[in-house]
Image (tube, rainbow, N blue to C red; front, side, top):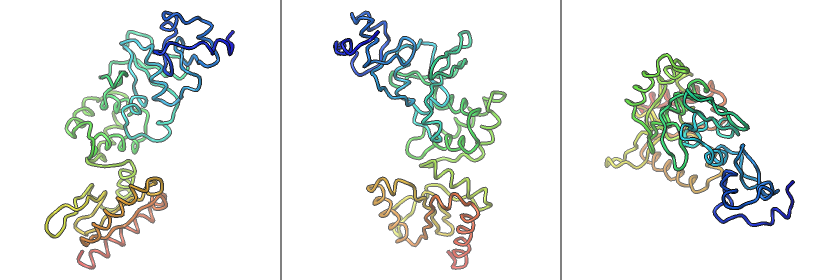
Length: 305
């Protein structure tokens, strides 16, 4: 039985504030009683962390990694979180780890663990073995809705930090024929586009298309009369000089970004473009959104742009 007296015994510096396997502690001379002390927690079988260790995906993965064998890897939505892919909030905050091992072994199991078997492509992300972005996308094909898959795939082709090329993505999906999630991924591929900057941008584009409106172009360069690029528009109809700008929550929570966007929009309007600012209220009502865009397009056409 542990006690406060046990907690008062200092741990070796190499083990303080981080996860470790109990065996490593014993080898360093820590007594079993000290390993059961109130300031420590056995988060997985044989794995010890400081009391209060986080239960988010990254913290759980760092702890579980101390006991993983070389044949194990983090996969599915766990890999997606660790890779920083664009995921729905529910998957990002889920307190569970997807761990895959080779088919000849039993799938891992235990508290917080969802085990799988397979032979996905993997690589080392720091000290964590994870499935590659494309292998992760394949696994997500059987876990996510079509729209969420489009968001993830758009992120893989993002403007600022692309993970793969369009050619690589198409070839990968074609190669998954017959596997779980293939049909959903194949359907999602129709809507995937390059050079997006955010999940909300993808969601807005999908809403516009499904409302029967023309698909806007993505990250359109806005040029001055001298031909210099003065800004980029998230979504735009260049033939109508019309820009669609999503007003996200960062305008409320990040004042620096807010001022950057204000300056960017000012440069866009100065060059003769009209800007329609889209917010969550519009996103919640596709009919209203479509009417707003339709009216703006008609007005631009009437004015001759």
